[in-house]
Image 1: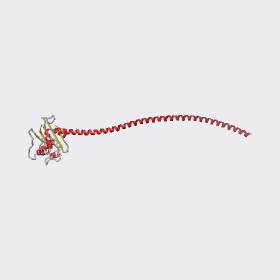
Image 2: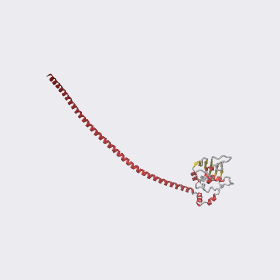
Image 3: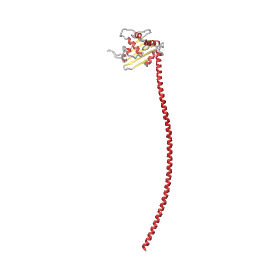
Image 4: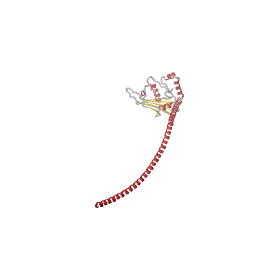
Length: 286
C-alpha cells in the first residue's frame, strides 16, 4: 500500500484544484519556506480525520477553507481526496485503489467519503487502524515531529510503536469490546431493576386481581340476594294484596246486606207513616 495521489481544492492556501502524484519511493516533500509544504501534510492529516483545529495550525474548522484575497473570491468549501494503492490488500477491502475524501462547507457541515460513498469518521479511522496511516502514526512526519517523538513520554512513544506493529486495531477492538461489555452490564443492571419493578407490579396486580375477583363474586352474590329479597317482597305484597281484595269483597258483601236492610227499614217506615196518617185522619173524623 502506498500513497498515489492527493487532490486539494479550497483547503487553506490551495485555492485552485491541485493534484499531487506520488510514485513509489517518494517519502518527503521539500521546498522553501511559505510554499505550502506543511499545508500538504495538514491536508493529509485532515482527510484522515484530525479533529483538532489547533493541531493543524488553525483556530477553528472554517479556517481550513480558502478565505480569499484581494483578487480572489473565498471558496465555498474545502475538499481533500487521498488516493491509495491497495493492490497488496493491506486495507481489508476488495478494491485495488481506495480514495478517502473529506469536505467542509462554510455552513459548518462536513462529510467523509470512502470511494465516493458517504461514511462516518469512525469508518475512516477503523479503515486505517494497524496500517500505520492513522492521524497520530509515524507515516506523516511534519517539521519538528522527530524531536517531539524523541522528547515525548514513553507512553506516547509506545503508541507509535504499537501502530507500527499493527496492534492498535486489536487494542481499539478490545477497548470497544470492553466498552460494549460495560454497556451490556449496565443494561443488565437496568433490566434487573426493571424486572424487579415489574415483579413488584405483578405482585400488586395479582393482589388487585384477587380483590377484583372477590369483589365480582360478592357483587354477584349481592345481586342474587337483592333479586331474592325483591321476589320475597313481591310475593309478600301479592299475598297482602290478595288478602286486601278478599277483605274488600267481604266488606262489599256486608255493605250490600246493610243496604238491603236499610231499604227494608225505609219501606217499613213508609208503611208505618201511611198507617199513622190513616189513624190520624180517622181520629180527626171522630
